Structure formats: C-alpha cells, structure tokens
Image (cartoon, rainbow, N blue to C red):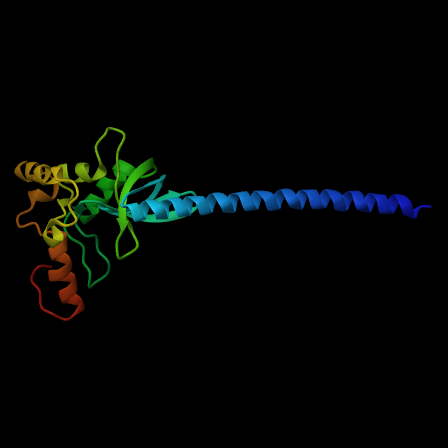
Length: 209
C-alpha cells in the first residue's frame, strides 16, 4: 500500500519536470527563430544596398573604426566617406600625427552611446561601412572632418566618398588650420599606408615616416 503514494509523487515530479523542460524548449526555439529573422532581414537589406544596425558602441579603435554591440553580436564598423590618421600597429606600421587625437575625438562622440547606423556594405575586412548619425542631426563622419580629425576619403578616385558635403567641410577645416591641418605637409592615410607601411614591410627605403 505504501508504494502507491511514492509512485504518485514520482509521476507528479516527472510531469512537472516535463512541463518545465517544455517551456525551456519553447523559449529556446522562439529565441532561435527571432535571431534567424534578424539575420535574414539584415542579409536581405544588404542585398538591396542599404541596411540599419542598431546597438551600443563598446569600443573605438581609431578615428574611423568602432565596434557596435547588436544584441549579442559585435560588429566592426568603418565610418563611411572618411579616412582618419592611422594609429600605430607595431614597428613596421607606425602611427601618424593626430592618430590618437582622432581616436579620442571619435570616442568622445560615440563611446557608450546607443545609435542607429545607416550602412551600405561590408568591406574586404568584413567591417560594416556605415554613416553614424548623431543626436544633433550631424553624422560622426562630418564632425570628424569639420574638426580637422579626418580626411574626406578620396582614395581610388573618390569611389568611397558617399557624402559630397565632406569636401567643403575639409576645405573649411584646412583654411582654419584645425586639427591635423596645423601641421605642414599632412599626409593622407591612404598615401601613408602605401608609402610608409608597405615600404617598411617590404624592405624599401622611405622618408615619409
């Protein structure tokens, strides 16, 4: 007679455990489905030419590159239309003047903020290339150029320059000798990478750095 209550208790516990596991499984499937929808929607938007990334800026590595936390995913983001002075990456890749100032300038604008980025594509380094709108209506790219902390990106004949206003902002910063324009003979980052970094890495003599 004593075995019946034990069996009933075991069956009740088993039933409760099955219900609990069922809830966990349903929650996991719902999370997987939501994540898949996000991935598919971003992929479809990329195929269409533009897409949005919303998240919090958790790192700024230099004057034109940041890391955006989107959900649990980290996206490396390259600011569209600009090229900032290079920071150093070892003996064979020395930094440019104003490289650290540019990194700090971008960090002051975006670090820790939750932002909605307007993105165009992924580059060969798998970074999302995006405009970064700020609360005051400007983009981070425009602020960086107008304060003399970045160039309008004219590399490759201007094929990376999506914002035509940046050319005028750069002229104004140059005329006012703001930021990097205080130095004589400022070298554009795309020239620095070739004439300095590539030369050092391949054993060529160079006077630029």
